[in-house]
Image (spheres, rainbow, N blue to C red):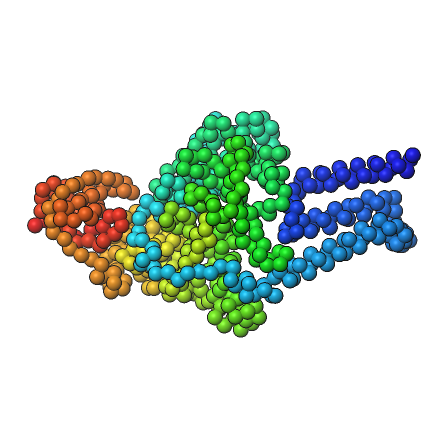
Amino acid sequence: MKKKKGKVLLILAILLVLGIYYYVTIPAINIHASGFWVSLIVILLLLLILCMGRNLRVRSFDDLHNIREEIKESKLTRLLAGLIIVVAVVYLGGSILSSPIVNAKKYQKLLEPETGNFTEDIDQVNYNQIPLLDKDSAELLGNRKMGSMVDMVSQFEVSSLYSQINYQGRPVRVTPLVYASPVKWFTNQKNGIPAYISIDMATQNTELVKVSQGIKYSESEYLNRNIYRHLRFRYPTYIFDQLSFEIDEEGTPYWICPVKDYTIGLFGGQTIGRVVLCNAVTGECQSMKVEDCPSWVDRVYPADLLIQLYDYHGTLKNGFINSVLGQKGCLQTTDGYNYLAKDDDVWVYTGVTSVSGDRSNVGFVLMNQRTKETKYYEVAGAEEYSAMESAEGQVQNLGYRATFPLLLNISNEPTYFIALKDNAGLVKKYAMVNIQKYQNVAIGDTVSACEKTYVKMLRSGGGSVASEAAEETITGTIKKMAQGVVDGNTHFYVVLEESDLIFDIPIVDYMEIVKYDTGDKITITYVEGDPVCTVSGLKSK
């Protein structure tokens, strides 16, 4: 009876240990997950330890000898020890056989970029869709906004996620609040997290959006409502990649949960096969293929994964050995990336350079975070950090630091757009740097002022012939006039009877525009743009 009771207690102890281990570590039950094999080895070790019981009191080499003898004599301990060795060998062998060393060609084909045309694919600059701030600046705005909410600041903090998305056609970063501490979680978890923060990256408008029913599922929950544990219990075999926090077009918060798919061996060829949309309020989940993902979702493929896939494509063209030794024809992405709003999607931008480590780019790539569509543009020029240093050199007396640049099309010229920040992390000025002639730098206190200086520089010979030819002149009768404020400056928007184009005339540059009215004749020199044309000259007719 004592032996039977001992066995029952042993089984219960094993089940209890395994249950606690699974609840805490929540590994995916999937042979393609490295964590699954590690967990399996840990479980087998725990079982072996429990089975060996009393002989684990090691005090001398004789005790170690006794343990070895028990392993030899006990069938169960021999079986467990053998299984540990087999699992370890399979894990190590699978890792090697799944690596680029053996499968260079397969890895190289995981991403197949298309070659694009810069002037056709990249529209002329539209500042409503340009994220003027980086993540660090967004965090400053978010913390400042949270500090002003006296009813919440003592209970909640701002998450560091700050996912960049397109929301109603504008670049926005969104991030949820989190419980300030375990005690604050205990006192507030019944009602959930009351709000999330939304920051318009073009206008810097920061809003704390309250959620009526509260966000019940998040990373800051501790028990079953923890988003990772909630997903694991719903989908025990899914291997999830980086989760992102997004909102749909109605402002409802969701967790976007990409599911890894391994296409080469046990652990190699990672891509995204499915995506789970989890309502952050109700916990309701929808699992779907990537191609069926709704268009409001922006971040299915993590940026780091896309960068890695392109590096495989660029470095493994001539095999793995060449990528390490000869490196003939090998290309890689530059150190850093940024986001661009295009076609109502978020695209990852990064430069492409040779692996030799020179300070120039041979081109750049745009990678769609929802569809994985990738386009390569052959535009030789300065590497991003060279452009950043060039911009910083123009304001070295002020000590401003450059953010990682965005790529824009200004007057059909590929141009780096850079924000310049002071030591407090606040954006003070903007810079535009010509990619092909990175010594040509325009600086402005506002975006429009910076662009105006840059366009003038292009016309004076700093840019290509194509940029100079883009300037046109039109004479006509004013059909409509309207006013607007951009970056604190008044602009007049004019439409002529003879054309459907809209002309942007900043009053700070052309004060005489106040003398004109509908029906007046006017001559405008401009550079055509979308949606408005940049005016460079104005006179009455």
